[in-house]
Length: 61
Image 1: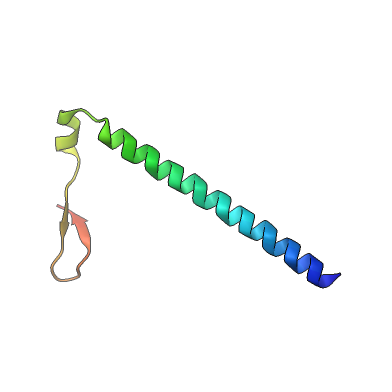
Image 2: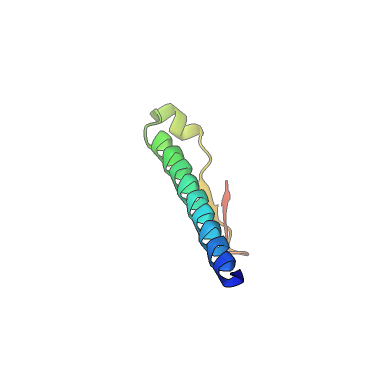
């Protein structure tokens, strides 16, 4: 019986993780779509990302 419970818990945990990943990807895609549809004046006010040569990460400029 305990292995069955562990398998069931693993399946439920995996399903929950998958659900969170799908929700997050939809949120990101929604934000990207809004940015694509933004008016040109709004696009100019959005911060641009520049690569920091010291750390190699991208930061708003």
